[in-house]
Length: 75
Image 1: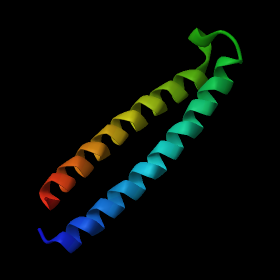
Image 2 (image 1 turned 180 degrees about the vertical axis):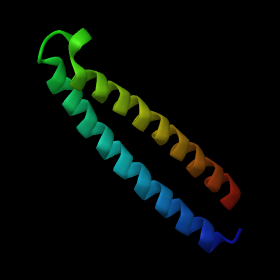
Image 3 (image 1 turned 120 degrees about the vertical axis):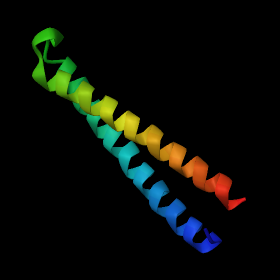
Image 4 (image 1 turned 180 degrees about the horizontal axis):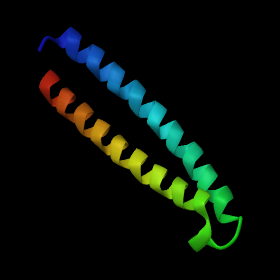
């Protein structure tokens, strides 16, 4: 893969990573707000925020791996 294409892909994935990290901040704020509502065992908003946070964390880790692999290929 040529360096220009790698640079374009790196930029795209890094932009995607920033967006997901911002999404995670919003989700965590929602989770915190939901936690203040009381009983967490029956709190659907808290459960959904927890699941969304975990899904987003997994996506972030996948993107970080893609970025690392691209950076290795660039050298």
